[in-house]
Image 1 (cartoon, rainbow, N blue to C red):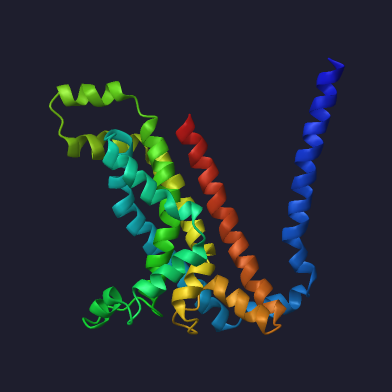
Image 2: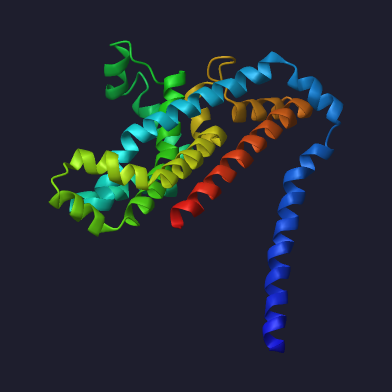
Length: 263
């Protein structure tokens, strides 16, 4: 019994020590400058333009994630085969690949010097140094988060319920939209929240294709880097604080609905 208490004390000490260090590291930026200067920077429209751009792009990324991710998660969960294994491997690849490499690959592939990029540019379709390029790169980075969470939710559905619906004459379309998605709504929201947060905070891949054009392709994380490089710490801290708030909200939504999906 005494050994168990000692074990519990050690476990809690390690866990809470990490928690305290993490909070200290994240909150330490606010001691770099005064709150008066931070609030002053928050009144500048240039900062909000970058934040609003990130919000608009991340919303577009979520919608596309849902459009593509729901069919992919359905295949991965309900259509087990060698093809689905390959699809799972490719769709999860961005999780283990450096975002900088992903951004570089898109920059090269869709640039005007590459045959693919030249083909698109000649037809007026541009991705490099454009908002749609940022949407594409953030979609690739955030897609695995959405699909894996939704697939996990799909996997937890009782297959007997699906089989019963089939015996009653329900089509695959009805099963997906009237049974699978309503039952998996918590996983769907959790996946959307996590992919939105990942999109909002993406920097490396975005920077590679954005060109850092103010008011056009300069997202909030890029703005933080630009302001820091110029030594304008109050502006960088102001944007970073907004991003932290967004992250906290999206993480809270994810945790809430993810645990609901588990139950």
